[in-house]
Amino acid sequence: MPDIVCKGISLGYGGKVIAEDISFTVEEGDYLCIVGENGAGKSTLVKTLLGLESPIKGEVIVDSKISKNSIGYLPQQTELQRDFPATVWEIVLSGCGKSLFFGKKQKTIATENMKKLGIDNLKNKCYRELSGGQQQRVLLARALCAAKRLLLLDEPAAGLDPVATNEMYHLVMDLNKQEDITVVMVSHDIKAAVRHSKHILHLGDGEMFFGTAEEYSHSKVGIRFLNSDKCGRCGE
Image (cartoon, rainbow, N blue to C red; front, side, top):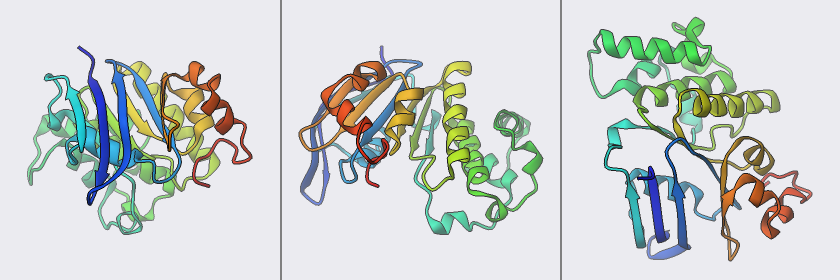
């Protein structure tokens, strides 16, 4: 069974529909990027996949082997969160569950994920003293502590400089390939999404597309966005 199947779902809040008739499948080990203009419902879709929001219409089916506690989630970061007064170690370890006391197993998982992302040398650093790229690596390591099979990432490269953005996309791609983790990621950078992901879901007013990254790059909507004067970035 696929990890996620969405059948004709409509999204919205406060009685207002912001996206409708969305259908797509995420196979195990897939890497799907969700793109589209601001307000198209990308973040709402991720929250719906997590079960934090309910679709107005349609059905979301998640493989029964994937529990809510086994999904790694990296939400959009707020300015308040960037100034959080905790150590890197405390933040990464918190991804292992809700507990005041963590055992050897949880500490080993946290240590291994910090090493994977090259931040083990920052273990005792205060989170708010880190660069934007370092902070996102910390949050990704935290998400990995929960992820057994699925990672949901909401604009993990938002606000990062070009170098840090490129590093983040490569990190996610390597995790998908080497760890065989299914990735669903919201991205504003369409060109980067096409370069790194396997499938693309484009949301927009009358412009929904779902298919491989290659198919998207040759589609009508893909060509329009990739060749726009916005350099492949939505909402900028």
